[in-house]
Length: 134
Image (cartoon, rainbow, N blue to C red):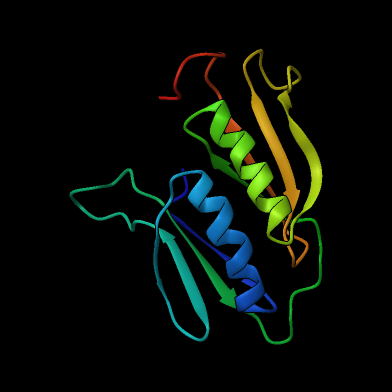
């Protein structure tokens, strides 16, 4: 459903440390940066309509923490675990350790973090244990 998303941050260097780590854990490449933004993933185009892109954009003044929520697809449960560990090691706060959340469906495996700017981010794998995500 989403083609691209921009997440506002107050301090790009601090946000990059966090997002470089969590996106690397999910296998999402960093594709660019300058003084006001950093980009991850690949932009969609006519030949690749299924791609997705996330950018970090510096906000002035910094955004107020308001519990915005961003969920990122993970290719495996191990990637969800790696996302959570990487986020904690790079300035994020725990908001839900990796676990199956049957309230969503029997195989919904997710972890939740709060990034350094107060955004709530999630990694989710929808595949059953032992199978890769589609």
